[in-house]
Length: 315
Length: 164
Image 1: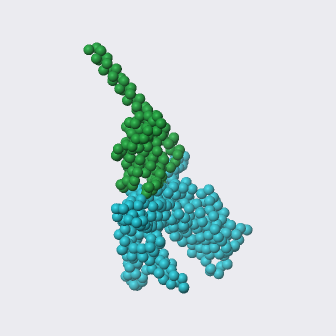
Image 2: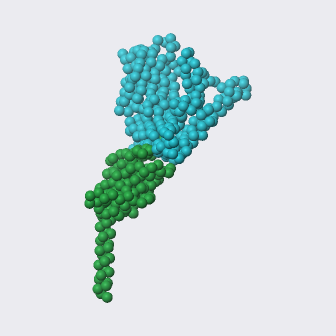
C-alpha cells in the first residue's frame, strides 16, 4: 500500500513538474488608425453616427508593405519558438469553413448544420493576444523617417501587456520598405521583452481573466440575491472566487441582482491534479460546486483562454 | 654563449610577465566592468551594432576588452537608444541571476570564453586620452539572436515559450 502511495505521489509530482500551461495565441492585426490612414476602411451610418470599420482583407490584398511587416514579425516570433496566427490565413479559413458549413447536409434527411445567431456572430478572427501594428512615413524635406507602434492587447482584459514604439532614423536615400523593415528589426526585441515580462508575471501570479455571471430569465425567480443557507448567491460566488484565486486576487467591477462582472481574476495555470486549465475549465469547477452544494444549475460559455460567462438558472 | 642563453631566458621571462600583467590588468578592468555602451546603428537581422567605450591605462588592453564588454552590456545593461536607434533592454532582467549563476558567468567571460562567439569588432578604434588612462571606442557587432538562444538553453533567461 505504501509503495502504491509513493508511486502515485511520484507520478503526480512528475505530472505537475512537466505540465505545460495553455499557450495563448497571438495574431498581428493592422491598427484602426493605420487602416484609416491608408484607406482600408468602410464607413456606414449607424442611426446618425458615422461608424468606420477596418477592411483587413482589402488591406492584405493591396498593401505589400503590410504583408512584408507582418511576415517579418511572424518570422521573428517563430524564431523565438512562438509562431503567430496569420490574420490573412485566418480570414481565408473562416470563409472556407463558412462555405463548407452552408453546403453541408445529412444524407438521410437533408438537414443542415445547427447554428444559432450567436454562433454566426462569433465567426470572426480571434486570438488571445492581439498585436496591433501601425506605422507612418514622415517626410522632412528630402528625408524620410518611419514612426512605428506595436501594441500587445490582451483580448480578455483589454489591457496593454506589451509594446514597442518609436521613430526611426531619418534617411535621404533609403526606400520606405527598407525603413519599415529596419523599424521592425529595431523594435521587435523590445516588444518580445515586455511580452516576456507579462508571461513571467502570469507564471508567478496566475492567468488574469474576466468572468461574467448572468441569470436566465426563466421565471424561476432565481437571481444573485436569492439566499441559500442564509447567504446570498452573489456572496457564495464571491467566497468561492476568494478561495480559488491565486493569492485571493480578483476584482468585482459591477453587479446587481441580475449580473456580476469580475475582472483581474487570477486563476491558477494548473488544477490540483496538474492539468493545465483555462477560464472555461475554471468556471466549470464553480458550476460543479454550485450544483453539488446548492443544487443550482448553470451554463458555462467560453470566449477563449481568458474569458467565460456563467449563466445561472439552467443549461 | 651562456650569457646569450641567460639573456634570452630573461627576455622571455620579462615578456611573459608583461603579457600576464597586461592580461591581469585587462581582467581587472573587465571585472569592474568599466565601460559605456551605445547604439552605433541598426545592425542586420539577428545582430546589434553597438559602440563600446572601454577604459584602461593601456590602449591595447581597452581595445582587447571591447567584445567582452559589448556582450556583457547587451546581457546586463541594455543599449541606450538615440540618433534613430531604439533603446534595447538588457537580456538578463533578473539581477539575482548574476550571483546565482556565478560559475557560469566566470567561465563565460574568462579569457577565451564563450563570449567570443557572440561578438566581433569592426572598424578602427577611436582613442581618447582621459587623464592618465585611455578611453577606447570600438564598434562591435553582437550576435544577439544566437546569444539569446544559448542563454535560454543554458537556463540563464526564459524564452517566450517557456512554460507553455
